[in-house]
Length: 65
Image 1 (cartoon, one colour):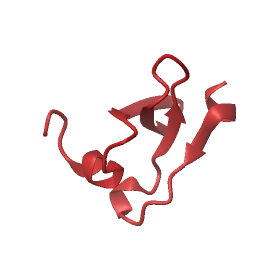
Image 2 (cartoon, rainbow, N blue to C red; image 1 turned 30 degrees about the vertical axis):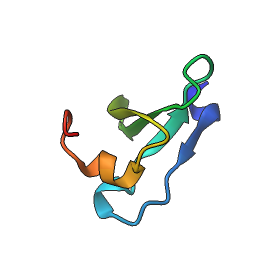
Image 3 (cartoon, rainbow, N blue to C red; image 1 turned 180 degrees about the vertical axis):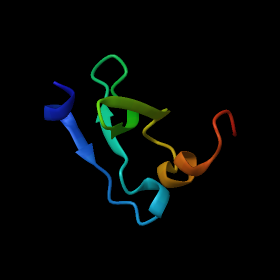
């Protein structure tokens, strides 16, 4: 399901090249889960509200406002 419903990002920053995202369905339909696949491991990078400045938020350390 994740593979079928996820999308690649097209951010130019080298730290974000391998990041993929998944749109969470209702009732949280504005939230995105950003992740990368590392071998047989799924590494969750960030869960954010999709109305944010996404490239900047992905580069910020967790917990930064």
